[in-house]
Each structure stands twice: as C-alpha cells, then as structure tokens.
Image (cartoon, rainbow, N blue to C red; front, top):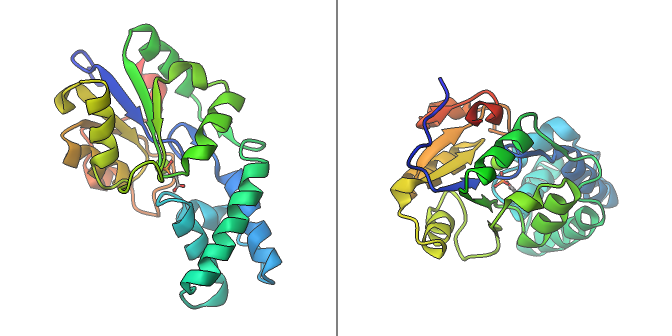
Length: 221
Ligand SMILES: O=C(O)COP(=O)(O)O
Ligand SMILES: [Mg+2]
C-alpha cells in the first residue's frame, strides 16, 4: 500500500542511491585517483559500497582498500583534492535518474509540497547534477555534506531545512537509501521512507526500520 502523505508538507531526499545512480561517475573519479597513485582501479561495485558518508570518506575507503592500511591525513587530503577535480570535470556524464523519481517529484511538487535535497555529497556538485538531469525545477533547497558542521546520520541538516521552511518535524518526511538517512530522519523527528535499490553497504535498509519502504518512488504518486 502506498504511504499516506496527507499531513506531510516538506519532503527531504537523499541524492546518491535514492534519486540518482551516480556510482558510474564516482567510480571514474575514484579510479582516476587510484591509477595516478599506482594502484589498480576499484570498479563500480566496490565504489557503490563506499558511497554515503561524504567524498572524503569515499576516498579514504578507496585508499585503505588499495594500500591495505589507513591513509595518513596528508595523503588523504591530496587524494581527496584530486578526486574533487576529477569528479568536477564530469559529475553527471554516466549518472542516471532512478525509475519513478521524476514522476514522484513532479507529482509532489504539483501538490505544493516543499522539496529539498539533503546529501552528504559536497554542495558544489548538487546544482550541476540536478541541472544536467533536469531535476532542478522540483527543488526549493539543497544541503550538502559540507554545508553545515554536521552531516547525516546527524539530524542537524534535516532540522535546518525544517526550520528554514517553518515546518514542524512531524510534518516532514526523509526519503533515503541507507541507514544514515533513516537514522537522521528518526533523530530529527521526521517520518522516514526507504528505497531498497540504492547503496546500503550490504546492509538491507529495511533493517533500519523506516516508517515506509517502497520499491520505487513511483509508489508515492
Ligand atoms: O557520500 C556521498 O558523497 C553522498 O551520499 P548521499 O547522497 O547518499 O548522502
Ligand atoms: Mg544515499
């Protein structure tokens, strides 16, 4: 049964793994960094396991896997800078919108709900990607992983958006693909909805007990 959104006024969406399949472009950038450092490419399947805690953590996991030890802060910073340059060159070339997403966003937007993106991805990449995939028109606001001192699973980015639009948390819904999204939503007092098709680190998102679970966001229409 489709979740009832009757008293929901604000919907916040995770980006990577929920709205967009971004791993193909993330993997190109990660693999470019690894290759420059003389390591073998990691490939999309591994990169998908490493996404979700922000770009610095993504690069840290890639270096750790390649070298067999935890990278030092300086080496990590250099590799992360290189990643940002590579990813910034083509952040949406092979990235696709998941099925059902556009229909759901269009329908919710038409109903007059406020829609926002809350991702752990750096803020600078959000607008270029949303523009290129023609999703920008649906969103009123976006928060990146570097917009505030805290990122998901901390509830702060969610509470920031609720406050920005003066909507009480119980009238807000967080939509995501991973435990971090559901945990952030629960801690913020939002209702939570999960999709099972994203990047959830081998841990079914149902295990984090979202209020709703849908196979596709088309079920929201
Ligand atoms: O880890 C990232 O860079 C982004 O992940 P998110 O959009 O799923 O929050
Ligand atoms: Mg995600």
